[in-house]
Amino acid sequence: MKRILSLPTIGLMFALLLSSKLAKAQTFFTAEVVGKGKPMILIHGLYCNGEVWKETVDRYKNEYECHVITVAGFGGNPAHLKDHFLESVKDDIIAYTKTKKLKKPVLMGHSMGAFLSLWTAASAPGLYEKVIAVDGAPFLAALMMPDATAESSVPMATNMKNGMAGQTPDQIFEYQKMYLPSMIASPERVLQVATIAKKADSPTQAQVMYELFTTDLRKTVATIDCPVLALGAWIAYKDYGATHDSVLKNYTNQFAAIKNFSIELSDTARHFIFYDDPAWFYSKVDTFLTQK
Image (cartoon, rainbow, N blue to C red; front, side):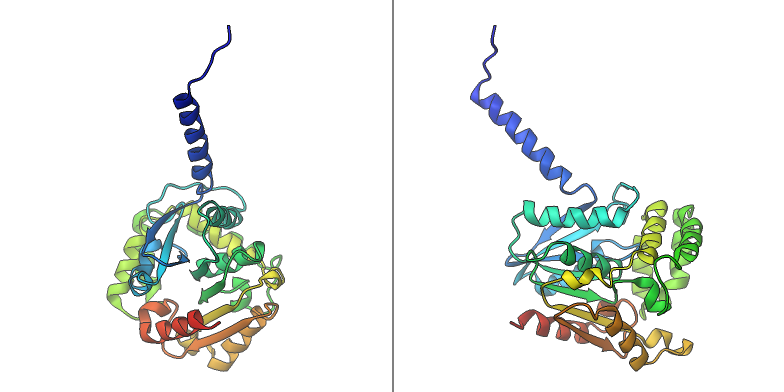
């Protein structure tokens, strides 16, 4: 005897199938949507979550629909760790863009998020309108050691991964409180970011650091077909011999393959540029966003 499914049953099955596909598109992150207007996707850095973009979202939410990402294993989000983790996050961002039918969104990322923004745009030509890379680059190791390659960086990356993977939340918190002053000028902001970091999954942070040091996108970014703005910082490394010109040259070399690329260096801010010098940061972002 044939079983005939009712229209409501068929509708429910279709809805469940659709919802499972939508959930699958966000396996490696969650997204909070704030504001109305043109879409903007914001991606945080290592040990952080979407909270670091609060002031940025407040500034742009009246003109932009801000999709604020928090990656799996960051900020209390459940971990979903696997090999080639960052590539999976990148693929999910592209899937999310298509599933949500976001029309030519702007990608803005900080540090790890800048790396992901560049990789995402390079992997999906025609999908994004602009990229803003905030103190991040196609190959992290070469920012520190200009002659580094993905292969030569493996031993150092492995040591860092092994040292980070077993940290407890309290160990993360204490280390971040000690380390973050080199990245953020404000003690209050240091405490804020260290508190966020305490909720991070250690193995995920370790894997991400390993991949950032062993994945070289300097040739990959040649496929980016939209304008890219890099915002860099250097003053925190002045005591180690860095100068405005030396850091500018290093950044320029990193982004050289991109056809439509511009760079601005802050002479006062540390790594968290949007915290240390928000007026400068917003001025540069505003100008870039309004350029045709």
